[in-house]
Amino acid sequence: MVAMKAKKTKTRITKKAKAMKVKSKSKNSAKASKDSPPNHFTKQEEAVLRKLNTPAKIQGFIDALGYDGEDDYFSVRSTLRTRKAHCMGGALLAACCLERLGYGPARVVGFDAQSDDSRS
Image (cartoon, rainbow, N blue to C red; front, side, top):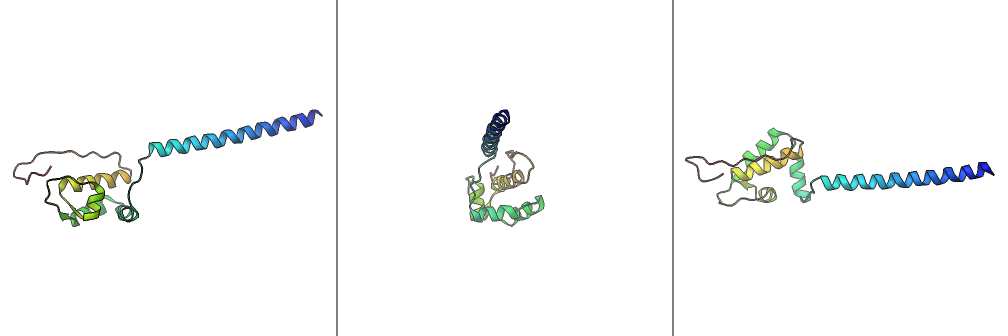
């Protein structure tokens, strides 16, 4: 009789422990996804970004972009779609790629240059 009670108690404890592990895992995965930036890129954009996996490849891609003479700033997605950028668009794309590679959060600095075409 005592052995039967001990077995039932052990089973109950085991079930509780398993339930707690499941809750803990779901909380951790929710926290990880909350802390991670969401991925809003299309499959085509993601395919391009995955290929830009070294600083040299990023620079080569940016060097191959056409020059964007607009006075507006465009997103990384727009730059990937149009394959055109001015210096700030290229900087934003590079910052995005480098952050994806683990170089830390983007640090883009604007500056004014003399004898420039008013690009930041």
